[in-house]
Length: 151
Length: 142
Figure 1 (cartoon, chains in turn blue, yellow):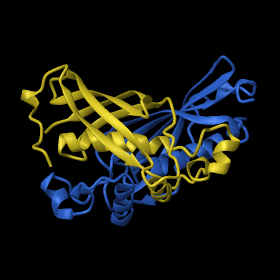
Figure 2 (cartoon, chains in turn blue, orange):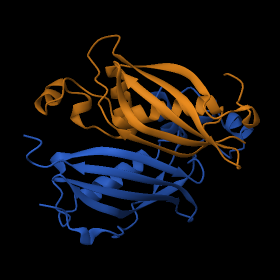
Figure 3 (cartoon, helix red, strand yellow):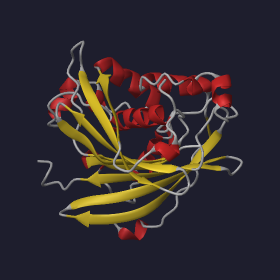
Figure 4 (tube, chains in turn green, orange):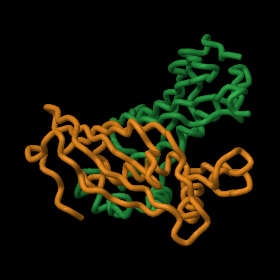
């Protein structure tokens, strides 16, 4: 059954604040094998003009994916989560996230389309500090494959 | 680290040096913990086979993170991206071996704008297959 396009434009409440820590930044950079000192050393970050260690570009997925999952699990939306795959991901940056940022995500349903029985939903996640400074916008395309295809 | 690129020296069509990234099961476990994405297809062969995958696969966002690492290392500034997007086309299959698998990344300059920004398209492959497509970034060189 196609998704209800009435959900387009729906805005979900901001997520609980998440505090970006130096330890989590280092752990995330380690996981991607990225040894840049700007992720670990305040002075190296300062040399590049940042007030504290900054987070790798895809760090925001920690908060945006969880926020997106909360939306796709909304029973009113009627998405069959077991058939969902992550199709596209894009980030648009105002500034890098950095240690000390206390951030929330506001998810907006950007678009809903059906193609060849597949439901495609784009969720925009606006990541901003609790002080209201916007840092990054995430665009996540989720594809729910048609039940026939997945057999 | 190689010297930071100078915007005025760059040309459309210029290729960036290729890089190879090793991905093992340990990489996936670390990334699962760091990202909070504990989907079983990224660590359990049994579950991966059950849903029709050839083996455990890497998190798409991990492959995307390797692309970000490639771009920011070239730029010499991990905060240099102003936009970065990818399409997850094929999975990166990670066997349970010491060697794991590899992801190969190359980049090409597609566009230079008046604001010291460089548009770079990435080619991202594993085992000869394109795993990401439409992998595009705008990098701001200060």
